[in-house]
Image 1 (cartoon, rainbow, N blue to C red):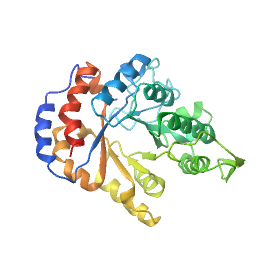
Image 2: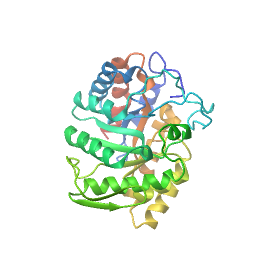
Image 3: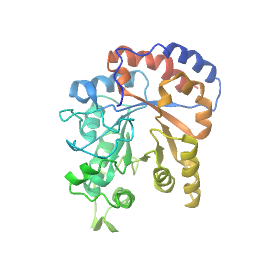
Image 4: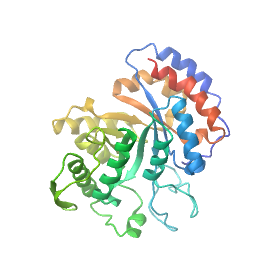
Length: 319
């Protein structure tokens, strides 16, 4: 969200497609494409949500990924990690739609598109309430939810919510375990430092028995968390090789197969020809999904999504 939206897709799309056509002869490439920051800007309204959801699904995109902040502190010293300025591309009156409510609206307008949080700030949420909401959305959408989580970076937001900033990482890990316990059966119990319940049930259950949890973040700690407990890993920036090495080592240390952890890549290079040229390399690293920012499609959503789908998404999906 650190860039201005172009009025139409950039010119290199045609060049990207030509490069991609050479790469897609490799049978090892099976790349899907999603859209991040989907609930921001003009797509944050009811009409905007329906627009991007229906046209993205028609164009063959795999998923919509939302962002969130519960509140926007007027004065904050925490450094926003995704822009060199250290400041969020928001103002006090910028609408940022609640991710789960927005995804519910998107679900009602689609049949195939996956519904992903990218990311939801897990330690700010009550895990029992969240497990209920996510389980309901997943059940009603036919098992289409991916729960992307993060520990958060904006301390002033935690202060406003009266949630301790300290030990938020440990809180995150425990909340994941608590939610999976609730999704895993009825009359379940959990005894932790931050969450505790005895013989309770939460229904409806997710359509497939659980919801994939995708760990977001570009730090070594996020990579270790993904290796330790994630169904997927979503670094939005950073040194992909180093992050994946850390994730793989942590997975193996916990008796897990790193190949079972899906990798979603959203670095800056996803908007350049290089990412298409590197498709085989990314696939070999375990990347199965790319995400591009929604502001690429702000200018003319129907035309730009269809064009991107035809020139980029379809060739990747047809390998």
